Length: 151
Image (tube, rainbow, N blue to C red; front, side, top):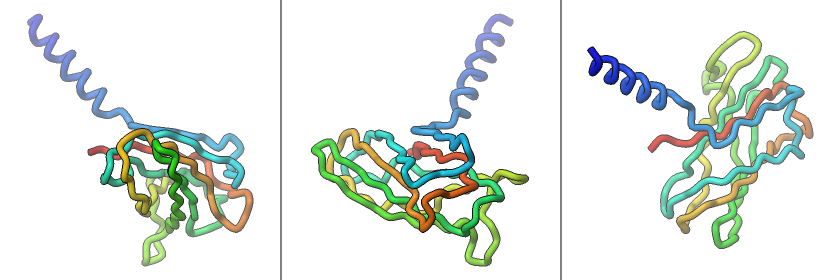
């Protein structure tokens, strides 16, 4: 009986650790908008020649006025070299249907765009990200999340 209890605890602990979200950064927009001056900063360890080890996931409300979003990302290498990428992500499929997770007044839309950066050095890169839309303030953005990519 004692061994069954220990086994159950080990299984439960491994299940709980496997379900955790690997957020590099989770930024809530307290007032329900994202200003173009709200710079998001984060660091990620990257291996040379590998793909970008994170993806972006935004949470929107019905107040978001557009069907797409542009995001500008800068990556600074361990040696100080800076790369820049402009990402465009559509919030709708080619059929016009919204790509959403969740429902109601708030929806989560993961970025489909890949970050077109190349990493020639192994080490810790620092990233800077802003929205790059025509309006200074994007109403209807509740959060911006940077999630670690599972290998």
